[in-house]
Amino acid sequence: MKPLYVLLIVTLLTLLVLWLASGEWHLRFAGNVGMSVMLLFTALGHFMFPKGMAEMLPPFVPYRVPLVYVTGVIEVAAAIGLMIPSFRHLTALWLMLFFILILPANIYAAFHRIDYQKGTTDGPGLAYLWLRMPLQLFFIGWVWFFSF
Image 1 (cartoon, helix red, strand yellow):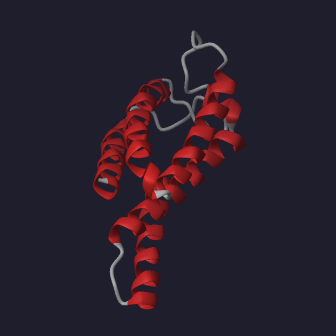
Image 2: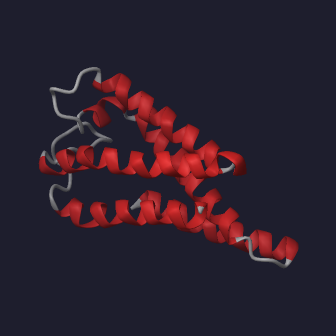
């Protein structure tokens, strides 16, 4: 839920500041700033809780901790790419694919009650998916709407 709050608050604050400064609504820019800051926020988790996030992946996946770091770097790169107009469309396409590809990790984590911050198995469980799956679709829709 925290990433959603970051996305919405940063977008609204950016809209407000830009409107106060220019008298115009810069919706596309504000939406991309919001998503970029959200991606930087979520990337932090990859570097702060790598072992716990690695538990979100099934044991048969090799190099789980390095993969967590790589996905964190991908999120940082996507945050930068969304802010560069000439890279925005390509970044958006890759980011939407990324959001689809990471969904199985969230499903696995829910089934196994993984709490990635603690690296334990006392997380919210399957109830988490009722929020996470629509949220993932919302993020994909957001990227599409504000990038194309």
